[in-house]
Amino acid sequence: MEQYSREEILNIVEEEDVEFIRLQFTDMFGTMKNIAIPAGKLPKAMDDRCIIDASSIEGFIRTEESEMYLRPDLATFSILPWRPQQGKVARMICDLYCPDGAPYKNSPRYILEHVAKEAEQEGYTCYIDPECEFFLFHTDDNGNPTTVTHEKAGYLDMSPLDLGENARRDMVLTLEDMGMEVESSHHEAAPAQHEIDFSYGEVRDIADCIMTFKMAVRIVAKRHGLHATFMPKPKSEVNGSGMHIQFSLFKNGRNLFEDTDHPGELSEEARYFIGGLLAHSREMALITNPIVNSYKRLVPGYDAPTELTWTEHNQNSLVRIPVTRGEGTRVELRSPDAASNPYLVFAVCLAAGLDGIRNKISPAKSSNIANQDQAPEHLPETLKDAIELFENSEWIRGILGEDFCRTYLSAKKDEWLRYTRQVTDWEVEEYLYRL
Image (cartoon, rainbow, N blue to C red):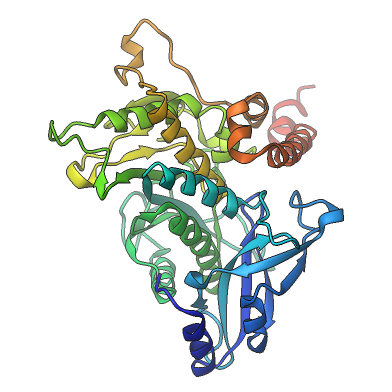
């Protein structure tokens, strides 16, 4: 995204007839929030004088500390292309600050910033390339979302099989209008499933991009009479949607994952980074796969990882090594889904990889665990399992903070309890007639 100074932003607002600015931030659970201010109040906002009452935001803050200041990040200024051309609307992503001027440490954007700065102090810069999948479904006569689709397209199919092609094209154009560089877009494996990939970049920038991406995709889909969902597994009989993440780690301008002494091979740092991801994947699953439905995706047979293995080819492995080598050498983590909060996901993943490097955590010698004497470890199978692993992890508390973990755990325990008390359609179908 293009970098602007304060004066340049104010000039653009005036010249482009921008009437409103949306000041956006992301809550603990990955939901984007915002307030809108008239353009005339933008100088006040950029002077850190825009106050919100955060006490009503779930899991965000204690009532006695309800007032927060929004500090707009000038680098995130963008005019929203789907708004009217007269009286335009722009947005800026904001950081949260306490009244005493200290950053709000439970803010997901702050947590990622903290982890990335710690990496920088050791000389590391992390670049990532996410692959974000989603479904496009019809809405009913009242505009409510369904899981209905009339198409039967599969992987890389095109029109007329791909009935979402026009909507996906408009999504790409919208993202480009907002300053994002899109690499490609295509139909995914399941009917009504799509993927849009944008250029890889520094981990903090890409987290902002993903939040922008999710907002734009849903808005453009609605303009086409469709509903876009990042729910990991909306239909049981098809592949679910993931957010695969390709990592590379740079130091002194060089990709550390490239083994310069043995071209085509992974470096020692790359293997340790993989070791860290594997070692911490279970305890950070509540972040990478945060909802009940996440674990309906992580099952065998649907190109989703279940075992803590790594490989160059197997789609069921947790970590995959893309074929590109040299400066483009990367490590792909396949477990996260797009229901997750990207700021938190990138924070724990980067922390896990760096822990692997610091402590020289070697991954299994072979990704084909089945041929070894040891049985494979598995990702948690339910949200309940993930909650228990998260709760017992001192490492995760060190990354996210005690207060954050306590609040997050409380919400997830409540989510699991509400889920277990539901009477599902499956239960009615299975038991009602014969019992």
